[in-house]
Image (cartoon, rainbow, N blue to C red; front, side, top):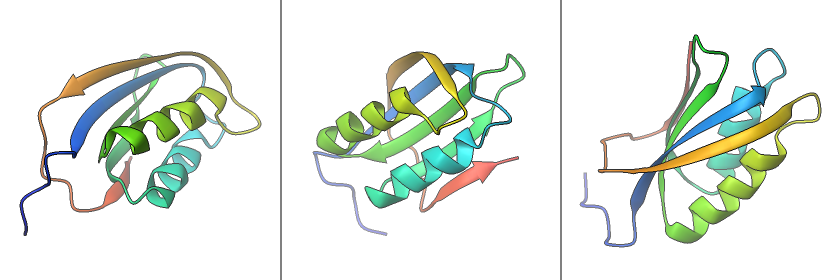
Length: 96
């Protein structure tokens, strides 16, 4: 595996609102894959969705914009963004 370039960063997103049971994880994964990002997305017991993504700053800006919108049946109240050290994700997965 090659080393990530210096423009590669990791962020954790915590999305709150009506984001479970509406296809939000599938939507988020699809949007991240369009940007060739790596990471994972999962439901939290709090009713929020957590997404960890690795990509360029520009990709994170684009992803954040999509996460704010969400799929048609969702209602996004807030997207918290937390900078994190890089992890070793090779794909983008939905965690069940």
